Length: 212
Image 1 (cartoon, rainbow, N blue to C red):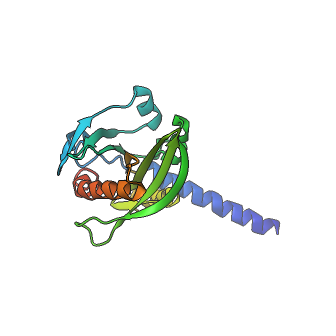
Image 2: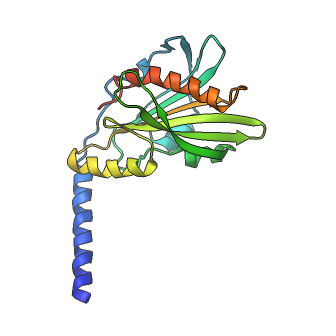
Image 3: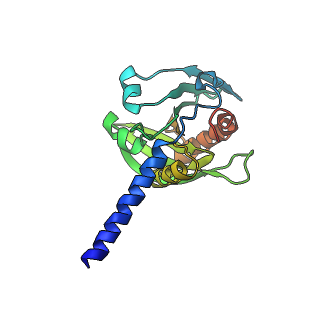
């Protein structure tokens, strides 16, 4: 029994050592284009560039970012944030809104996965939907991980693919895309429809900025 346990422990240690060896050899991959060049006009939407406090960027550990609030002629607005990481092998990992949003005073009252149809793609992408509440205010969040050619709507799968790609492709670069909008007076469905339409517009452009 002790020999068996020793062999298992040795195998685990060897696998961990190999994983660390491959992970430390992962390349630092830059974005295909600087996110600062991301367009501020998307169809009928016009964006106003913004910036978080410097301390937020220090916590995020992000290598390239884009933040802007877009408005359309109907006066609807959506904030778009994109964070890109050249490498996630030295502790700078993509943060989940499920962890940071409650820290801003917002409560997550509902979460689900939503399909987003993108005309340029054969199948819909999936995005995580959060309904946030703070006092009388409600917001809708859509986000996904866009990493190494994949659109991922699961924190768990994001980590699984990160390990796999660090071994098989020597890559740990990745990005996080988040949309936030206030709840439309017409309700959640109307808000989601507007956000999904906006997401469908930006995905083809994002694919020219984020490495596949």
